[in-house]
Length: 179
Image (cartoon, rainbow, N blue to C red; front, top):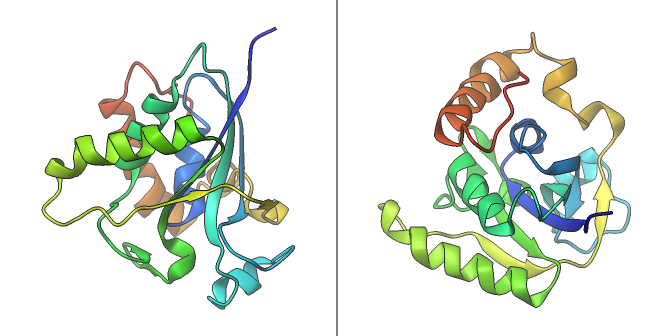
């Protein structure tokens, strides 16, 4: 039996990052949800109010023998713009912020190392929040694996699909072509 690790990331709408991480070799489960705030058991509507402190995130269960946390961080930073504060494209608000919720000190250290390594790739400073993981609340069922069940939606066609195609080209050895 292999070890399993958790990773929790937020980079805009969880619909986008969920669709990417579901296709990463070594990621065994990807759950969209809410974390990083103070409200217990928030709903999507609560999150959209901007009053919960939570971000839209994905929580991954992954096999570190197949994918490293550093690889996951590199995929995360490539999958969104970590220089825009509380926004990703048309999605605006603190719940769309770039955030890494570390599950232990090694993840915290690696997050700061990768931020330091990739900061020269951007014109603006990286604003990704790095915080200790405390609690995760799964999102409602309609938000789980959104792309798979909503491929005809405008969001899937114009936002998710181009990002998936780019990520597949960029990380062809790490991403499964299942979309």
